[in-house]
Length: 298
Image (cartoon, rainbow, N blue to C red; front, side, top):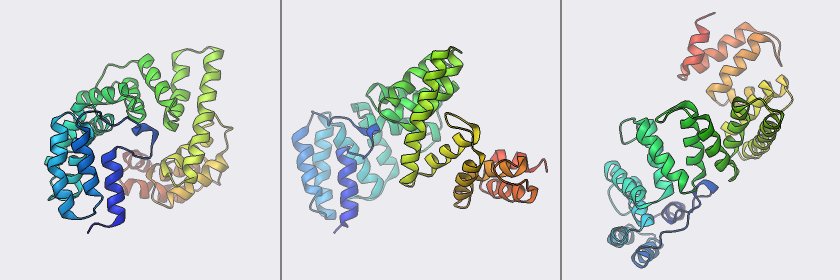
């Protein structure tokens, strides 16, 4: 018998209903009957029922159902009704992506980008991000925007970066709004663009604040960073310090790094070279190369 929590996680995963606007996609209309039969079996909570669902999911995926292929990916990834097998899980993730799952396509992009299950390949990563982005996946839209901005796997193209960031921002992706605030002034220096960038920063700050209140450390860091640099907010090093020190104490590496800089420069806090070195040492030990380089200068 599987725990109710594991059952709930599985049901959410295979149905494609991840609680994020980035994963909103209508279910596959192909092979619906065997897929639904398999899904109903998983509600029985037992290892045997999951195993019996497997051939139904296979049948559905052969008929083109990307949700079913994704379900099999999850089963092999976590060992639901089958023995855990990361390699087999990866193959089913790839099949789901090829059948059109925006979620699977986005994951494929991430896996090629970070070398998870496949060798790092930024060209293939960008290709999968673009497929998922065209399917409306907002996280992928932001990822392909960043790929175009950095020239990672594709040729650098600021216009395309902004295009996809705008698409992502329409689905309230906080980092998309933030990216637009940074990138729009690079496109031109007009007053209208400056106003648009300011608006994007303000939208980002609002979303970061909401996400941070729900425990999102990266959003909390970005909010502190915006106060630190004055991006869309009044520059306030005291607020930046408060944000950095809280996160730094929790082991957030970039917060440790920027906290050290505040101590070095005496912004938002009194200058303290020893404290700066202490936080740089912590970030360096955590693997942050920027901290290691700065620490070597003391």
